[in-house]
Length: 311
Length: 284
Image 1 (tube, rainbow over the protein chains, first blue to last red):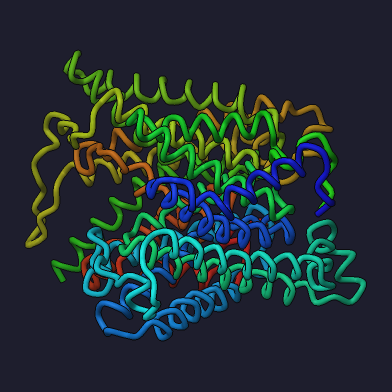
Image 2 (image 1 turned 180 degrees about the horizontal axis):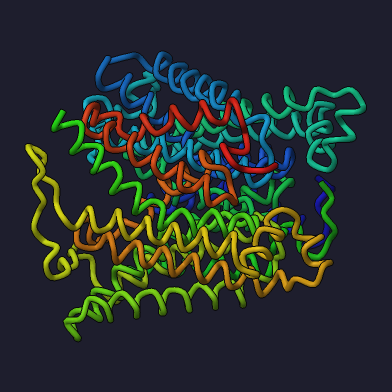
């Protein structure tokens, strides 16, 4: 991640300002959108660790987000669990799941990785859709308590919720930025560039890929937990292929292996989705065109425009 | 026993449809290293186009032929103008097909609306056949037979013709194949278009039973992927065996443990991946 310069610096400052002071000025509709952007930004960054830094293209990453959200919903509604139990349960279940899946996928690469994560993600989607006694099937689960009430916070409303989300975002972003600059993160990049060479240098590349997968799953679970509280409702649409590939688009559109790019990508997609769907029912058509144009015009992402891939 | 035979035949019917879809997917993968998210859309477009043609002409055969031709042409254009430029770089190709999958889905919704429908049965095939206590719909048997014929035809093309030899060479090693003078780009276009046409044909064959509805594309896609993963990417034989395995498991799973029907697909995939990551007949 090179230091921002020129227009990149301007973008960071403007977006940062909007994220920090925006909610104090905007209407509650826009505060809601900003909250969505920030939560999905965590998710997009977590995929960036896998896709951008490790070079493992996961097409089932939304599954961990969805499973964590479901865990919160089930714990809170069916078992009446407290706030911390829900948070810990959501993150733990999502992470354990990624630890289990990681065992299956960590020895495959490239297009095989893509196919297998896709199939695993679809399996979880199928489970959320058909395992009606637990997940409520197509109806999803509603009635997740408000964060403020559940956690016993002294304040309530969308703006405080937004700032709680922003805090979580900053913590996650900080941790991920540290991670990708650490020796561990550098090793991941090495594996992305030339796994055979890393192997012959004595690195356990399987273990690195596995850990990268689990870490990405853990951060995705965090964003899933926050999303469950934000939305108060979970449904199988969070786990489906469209969700995973939208996530993929956020990272690709913004610029893989930059962390900032996926944040911008997440913001752009949330914004587009909500603004466009206010004007037209043909939102999917437009999203399809966004995919095609992105790949044709900026295959390395907007943040990487005009420079060589810095990694 | 009756139950077992009926369910087995049902499983074979699913396997027949899956084979029609997955054979194109696996060949396109073998040649282009492409994960084609739009492959389920080809199936969907096949049903919809056939539906429109049959509504106007009352001819099932014409409906099937037009559906195959139109969808194969769509596949060819997609490959020629949007996928070929990426060589065999899987990520941009996958994103591109995802974009097209969304375009097709919304386009179909715009043109044909969201109401589910089924195609009519071919004349004489709407009844059922009785053998002792087993009662089985004739049409399902018909689909099984047709898919078997398609399988044989594909096998002959693949093993006994020049195109098949080029195809196998390209699946094995695209660079060496190109070096020997095989036009890999044109072959890719051909395979992609043929795969799209086959999926559309699958849609027409499945039409009287599964019908067409919004979302059928993404309902079938994971099944087709599981078939390809189990069978091995790029292998026709693998697609055949994978289809039978997945068709059977899906049917018995749905009948025995309906809540876990998707989950029951997962077990064989994990077993296969644990033993052989490239699938039963795939090559690394």
